[in-house]
Length: 313
Image (cartoon, rainbow, N blue to C red; front, side):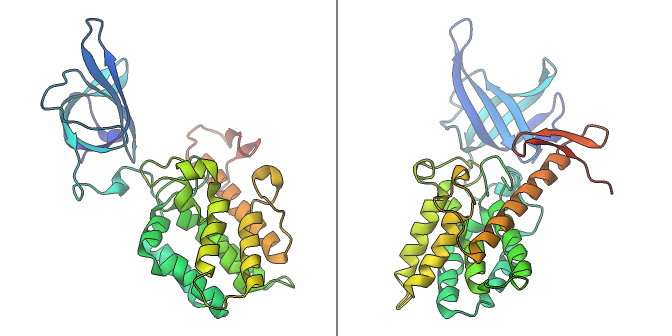
């Protein structure tokens, strides 16, 4: 395929792209046409279907499509003029070519995470984690491919897994350095704290809030999931379940950041700091990586409420 960033003026393009936006408009003469934005992992390009003929098959915004088009410069911007179009078929494309994806190997990250689960000593906690993260293939696939956010840190394919593993590694490192920290409970919270995002956000390439995501959010859905899975494990201790749920409920740390409860245990406090640390530092990485301006400063970052200086290497 030809990636959007590589398209040249006058080039003939036949390939698959994600239809990010579609609108039906009319020319001054009253003729209908489609104005579209197409996306792959390298960028977004404007596209037009000026003649809606039988060669333009039915399709919707938010779908993968195969096009036959010419590329041209229009007012200094590259654009596609599409002559033929149809929905892409399963197996004709690799989703990773059309959405931002983690630079880390997803299979390796998942193996590292499951290795932490295998080291959990409490049999109830280990069974809970295995049932949620490993044994349900549908959930595991969504977890490995999902994004950690709509537009903030780790907002790309594999981002949820990458963020989760980062938080787990920080918690694992810090657990032995403080009294009163139960490592198994802490790791359970670290692994499950954002797991509800597989329901809060729609799958890539859409990565939009689902209906339940808008109304409930990943914290509520994560706690509901844990409650449902705990009920399937015979004699699971009630207090142990509550301690794990508390980590999920309180991991944002403050009421104004969406936590229904403040962290009230050593494990919950440590998880909050680890989650915040991984998210904030990833945000700084992404700001620096996306900034091409000369000089040591990468500009003002609204989410962090400060100017970010590039690291000296």
